[in-house]
Image 1 (cartoon, helix red, strand yellow):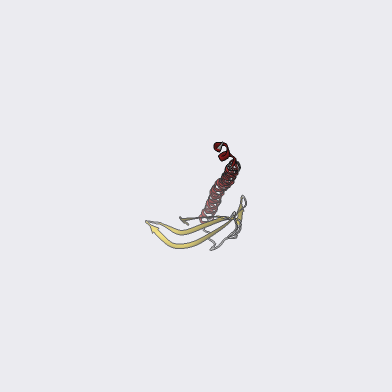
Image 2 (cartoon, helix red, strand yellow):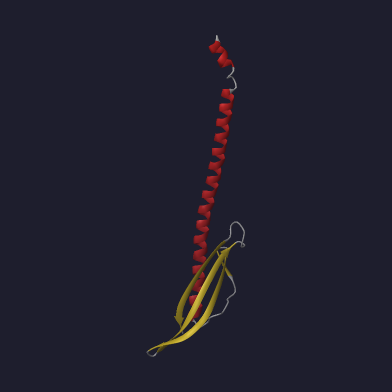
Length: 134
């Protein structure tokens, strides 16, 4: 008789175990949702970073084309490439003479950005190049 009386005192133990397991599963589920969200945002930022780099590279190519004509503006007006704001700067360097040929050195920098600084989706890439021209 005593054996059955001991089981009577343990009636709520199964309820507590089930509640504990339910809480643990809920916490694990919330963690998995957060982890999935962070992973998808990370890949989005990687793609946006690559796009910003390509936009900055397009700015460098534009600056090289301008310097080939002998035009080098210290700060050209910003233009857009696929939604990215691209700013190109050019500095005229020294004249270099090799044999009978003379070259001018141009230092170019291009910056591409998307969004506003401090915002969640802000992306910025900068590329620099040194070229010679007429």
